[in-house]
Image (cartoon, rainbow, N blue to C red; front, top):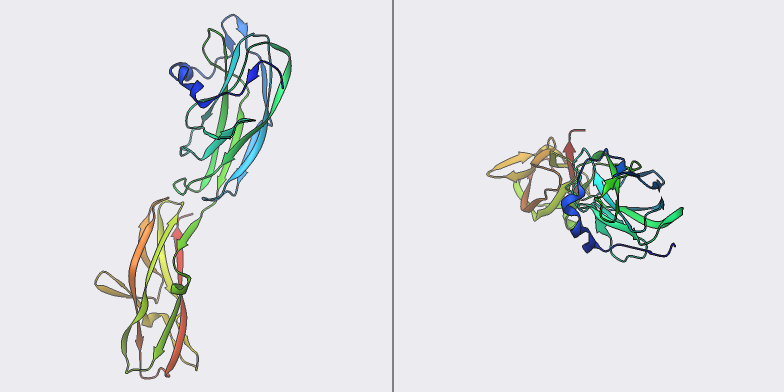
Length: 288
């Protein structure tokens, strides 16, 4: 690496925040032209990254300048809303990654580099949160150059970012609660199933609806209890599972929590005695 430059620390950005966001169309710095600069590659694609996952890609920066004192900054620019903290940049030699929610000082030097140099090992990590809605996002890393005594000025070459977040749905519950076991041994009637159902769910789409359904209960010795004779208690009403039951609608990133949701089964005279087993399906419905 070229002598005289060093990796920046996060605190260095505090001295220039007040003048950082100027006209991003400018290409001249006083009477001097901007230095030669290019990011390598010029496009990074992050596709298929779900909430809770992350993807990291490396890039390099090539710079040529005759200035004896200079600094290079980077900022995120997008026409779409990208939640803070989902894009993290780490400079070579640095232990900590920095969020692109504010401009970052990434390089500076104290001598000219007339023949140019390339610094590799920069990494950009994309880690979408559950609050980041599924979809395709376009953004750019805009680079700003500052010489001693001047203000940061945007460079014409930016780094294009393509972010693709697929729809995702997550459910947390005890695995044993997914199954229904019921013993038909008493007179025909309505019986509560135990234990009650407790779960939490979330999705990265808006709006999304939590659905419960079942295919019914099959007897180990024959017999079948269809979905329309299995019920869930919502408020003071019993709702049949003849069709999937909508439990609650929420927004991206919002967690739906259910505690002690009661299920019931109706038995009839024609149901053979014995043990019956079934499953509760927990799904998410949303508009594509």
